[in-house]
Image (cartoon, rainbow, N blue to C red; front, side, top):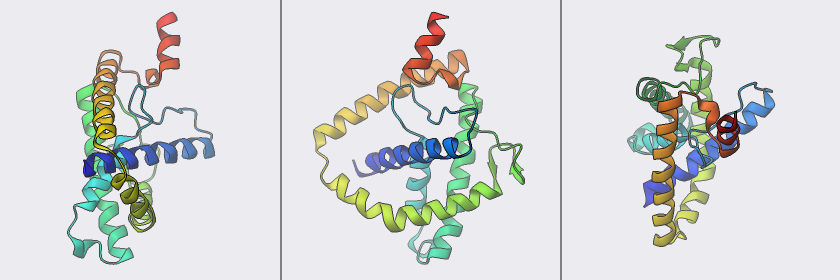
Length: 179
């Protein structure tokens, strides 16, 4: 139950970060999630789970947490991008226009951002999330798991068949179906 909610909370926070980033940059491409209905960016949830599994000595100071957390999150980001591209035929992000990118999947500037985000999350956000998880009922967890599984299935199917990330979201999907 604990790791499921860590994934959900950080994926939701990642969705908010992505929406704010898109608005601040006046991004042309505004799809900032990976599910049809749920406002989640799984790369954030998976990254924080991976970072939280690092040995304690790699997270014992802010600098070490930023360094090893940033590297770990970057590795997860690379793996998630690879999966989306190879298994579903889509790319949610492309760092080819950014300096020092690796196969369009990751880049040095955002790896540094990952390090800062990891430190902020574990230092300031995690105590709040732990308190929220402690108050969550098993029934709420079951309902959330079922919703995530259902949305994951339909989202993956839609992405695999249509190869268009802009269809995520009921409004976009309905507009496309009517066209």
